[in-house]
Image (cartoon, rainbow over all chains, first blue to last red; front, side, top):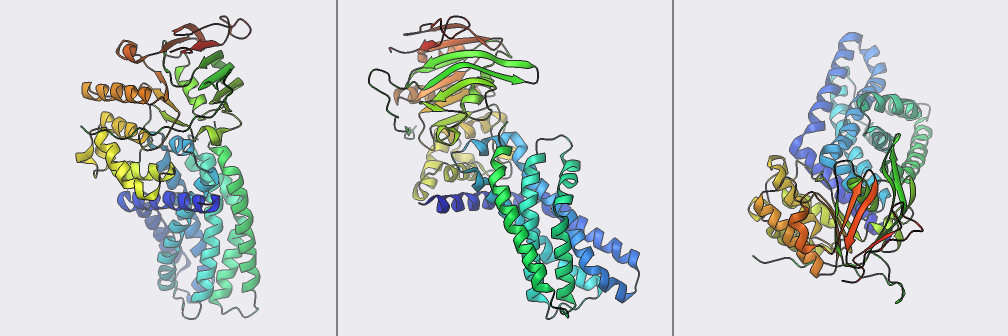
Length: 229
Length: 258
């Protein structure tokens, strides 16, 4: 088995383990979905019944809900590793530590995509948005945006997992770094929903793809150092 | 009761005149803040020996084991396993060791079998052998009947047994056991003794930190007493002191002529 195939197999094993644990325990799902739904509902009430205002605000509110709930999800995926020394055990297996990063990032991406898939119809219903015709662009935006978020979130969850104030430190460290991603994701979502009259969409998607590549390489290259004391 | 195969990692060759020791440390020190958990330990343990590490709480036993397991880095000095430096060759060292720590490293939401299957995949056990080895390991530690129950409902002793089962899944040349008898009932303690005996007979080096040294006595080739982060006493076949290195007198050689 080549190194790449072995690393891919390990990453998938870690992601599968996380998925199984989450399906059983539902530690992240319940809190994140409930939290995101409350955020969207409250903003909906705050903005009032003005359809135009709601439609304009929808892309930003969608990503706000995804980011807030995503912070809970990626943090939780690392916290399960601290129970009874599991993270140390994971670091002691004879495996490439980039594969551990990849596995946790895949778990984070899966959680974010589920979140996005649930929240998108909720936004459409609450804010009166017609998604027909915008699906391919929205799916591409969600996929690229969530990948970048998972890449950065996995790294910073690794940084903060041993801290006492990890719930505070994770957003504090992560939010400045994902600012470009948020900007590009909101702009791409706006362009997708508006039918992209100025052909901005490809440029924002390219920015997201570039961001993802840089963050995945940086995360994979440095995550291993976080596992050492 | 049927017993699982003990898998042994192939030995790395040293020269005939100077075979590679299983463990070698030189002036090994580890600081936590301003306090030194290890303050300059120089040891040499020959391949295939079973050696006990004992001493009072805070003596540095767990710190020494964690450095050898590559869980933490030394602050000063060096340590090697089968000639591989733990700080610089950590990836290779991890292919040769297994470490049983105080924490079991199990996932509460997975069953005992799922925990071991996950470990087997990460330990590069061939896919076709993952299930048979998992089943055999669980049978060996007496948990076949609860293999499909989540470990969240297990007692501390049962969790320890699952962690012991993980040590049986793949090949090792050095086993680092930190208080392996802790949390176990009498049957569990017999299980640990039996496993150590089998590892010893298979030629695997075992370094075991324990307060139950009398219990281990028949299985031991050597004993190292740590106190205050230093080697306080050493005993065993072929043990010797070298004035060049050790603060007590030099790298202590344990079990060189069993």
